[in-house]
Amino acid sequence: MTDAASRSISGLLPDSARARFVDELEAAALTCIASDRIEPLRGLLDAWRSTAEAYADTSVTSTGEDLEYLDVPEAVSRPEPIPEGKG
Image 1 (tube, rainbow, N blue to C red):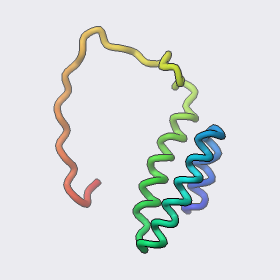
Image 2: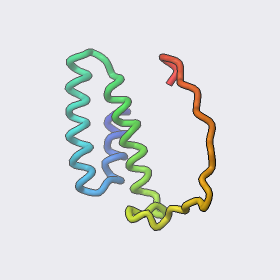
Image 3: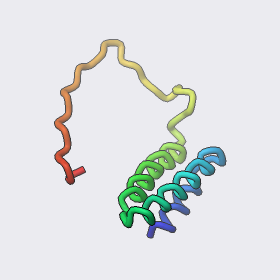
């Protein structure tokens, strides 16, 4: 599953981001091997999946043309912290 996930992510990234993804993927894999834990790789794939989705979304531009600014700022409530082990 991890191999398929990394292929689908890298296929959506531009060359410059793909190179960075591969470098970070290699570092995370080495960390996983050294620590005998998979969490660093899962976190990396989750983060890069979001980045790949943003690149794939044609309604998002790199210039910010797609952003809408509020005339009057809206206050939002402060989110509650996520308890350990639940995020």
